[in-house]
Image 1 (cartoon, helix red, strand yellow):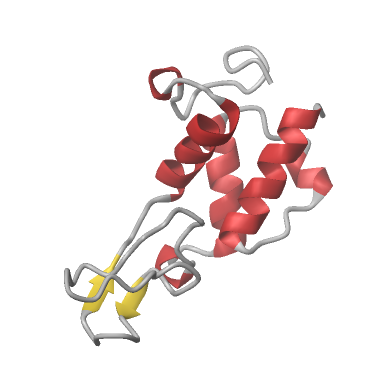
Image 2 (tube, rainbow, N blue to C red):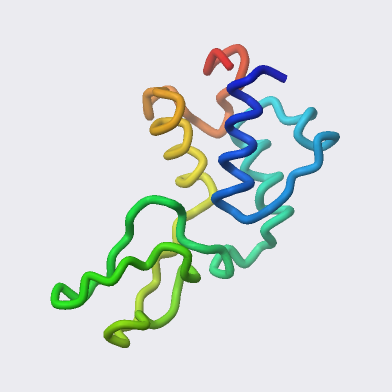
Length: 120
């Protein structure tokens, strides 16, 4: 496992609040396999996951409260407006690859192999 692979797994564990066992991570070859592994550890109800580290603000223009570290759906603690920022596992993993590893979004699919296609 290369340094970039380790960094990606650490990013994934941080964003999703999970711990992926090395024995399971070693079998991951594609982006889709990683997403499936994440889902197994997060659970099928991704709504229980927290908003990722990207800055997400309340939808109420007068409020602007930062929703990071809050559940992906609920009520803004500042103004009380409800929100539902339900982002798929695939979208989050893709964003991590684009932002942290300078991989072009067009190059990423669920079939993309980390070593052969994404040069990990």
